[in-house]
Image (tube, rainbow, N blue to C red; front, side, top):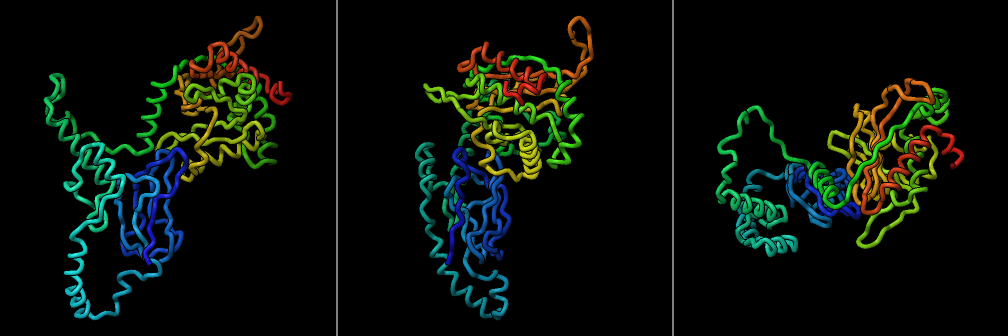
Length: 409
């Protein structure tokens, strides 16, 4: 019995994926729940397991193809043995005779490819493509969605090439092309580019700056780091203090924790804080849920776990969805100041930066203090300047006097 391999549901905001690679070949033996194919989404990579034990009968969509939720990727023949083993005891002449007898049947069966799926028909109708002219790569020559998209791209390229080049356009080969390396953008990188640009186009973004004296926080870390790590099994970092400071400020300035939905403002009375994590694949933002109810140790453990699994591409889709506010730390890379871009549909994002000893006026004296610039980018459609500045001042006050957070002041 053949069982179809389908693209699983991957989260409410993820509808498409790219076939990153097949982990098995047609004819390979597979175990139930053994990973068969890796899908690349705009957030994380997802492995699709085998629905049964048997043999990977056929592959419907090849590497690089674009698929949506529910698309048939291939099929597993339940309980079957690998091809090489199944025919090992057959005599060569019997196999040749069987192949000769089955060839006409196979030819007749394959003469008419199966009808294309609805997604292909929709693309053909919208883009005025002739399905009969598209070479199908699916089973028995069926035209898949990937085939249709490839044909559409080819048609657009041909149309663009037919147009006369602008006078200013560069002609001929690229200079120094032999010293360049051209690689395809990953789905994650494409999505990052698209959403950052979309964020700039949709929101009325503005950034306000302040600086914070990190003496008190650094003093607390120095005094209690050994006991903290011994008790909780995790190091006391800066990020937990910033998460707590932001949550306290969000409670006072709820607009920074809200979002615009059509003509409505959605105020969120919960605090799911996204923490930007840089990986080799790109930037991901896992979410610390119900951060207001977590201790410093709980926050540090959660962020540490996110960081480790992000580097191994082991984050789950649900861990990347639904944040209400984001914190990004460019300081770990040496950034002294920057203007972070909103993580839509959120209305605020805090940028942390490098801690640097600087001379500051303390009363009537000049002292050297560990200072950090803070940047709050916000959606001016929802948050006024007064609210944004007040929010950032509250974050500053909470960090310069951490007892305020402990006393809920």
